[in-house]
Length: 294
Image 1 (tube, rainbow, N blue to C red):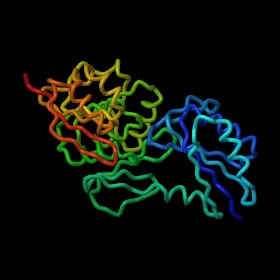
Image 2 (image 1 turned 180 degrees about the horizontal axis):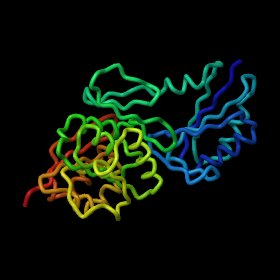
Image 3 (image 1 turned 60 degrees about the vertical axis):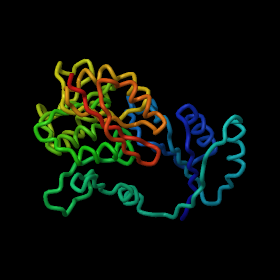
Image 4 (image 1 turned 90 degrees about the horizontal axis):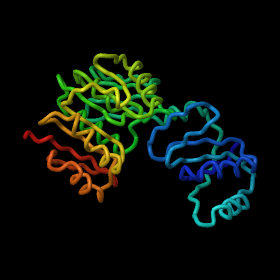
């Protein structure tokens, strides 16, 4: 038996409307996936809290004519061109297919981000266990990869690290696994912190080495390393807070911005930070800077 799968790439504002039309067209199943590795945290099962960009997948019988449905959908969004694709799906062991989509990833030759169902036959590997799901970033987005590569290459022993805007906690947990003396994760979403705590527990990381708190509960101390993988505008707005927590001589790692936004970021942190390195992956940038000693 085979099926047809329609996949749409949608902004958050359009997703539920498209879902409504697909349900009324008797879709057999509808699935949401993150289109940009931007974790979201559901308050309860009755309220969707979608990503800024989602992939919506709808399943139909193999013999269903989808042309009229697609034409009707386009009429509902006359100002937009809906991006979609249609693929044929053969019957498969779907649980295994899902698991096979998420393979261990290596950063810097020593740090591995690994789903719990994989076991690495690599002695002395530094492994962060992280399963995919709505509430988890998995390290697949270029900005997360750029940050993980920096952490894997850095000497974190006896260092204190602040992961600001921690989301799933992947960066702070990686820093702790790589030997940081003390790591603080902070996010303004309490459910993000809950997910971070759950991920930390999976990796046997607890206080005082790893701590998850709301921003207003951060300790009144400064850190050797401050890392923030958010977006350009929040990074600009947060400049006073991030500088407040960064020691003189400390390292500032910023990601989540595009190449044409680099100069705005530089301006927001001058003259306190001297930026020395820019790394580019696809259209995304990671900045590395050092707090000046005055």
